[in-house]
Image 1 (cartoon, one colour):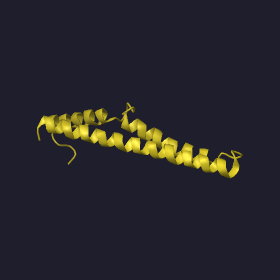
Image 2: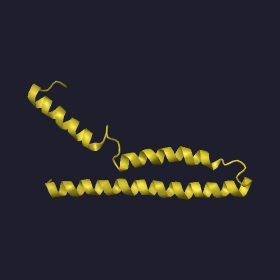
Image 3: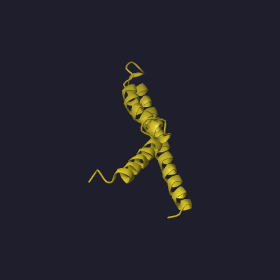
Length: 99
């Protein structure tokens, strides 16, 4: 596999990640909006129970965004690749110690 094909596959993977996130976000907005409407029609905001679903699912959307947009500085893909290279270099220098 040449470098151009590798870049294409990485870009395609990234597009898939974005599509999944935006699909999740769209579902969140639609479903929470629908739940809010049902909540209003059934009790006119006397008890806003839809907020529990919005909060719970919102946490998931938040972490999905962190992963998709690579906002986690500690365990990002770049960090993983650096660590893999580091361990591979150590193994080359010291011989195989994980066998």
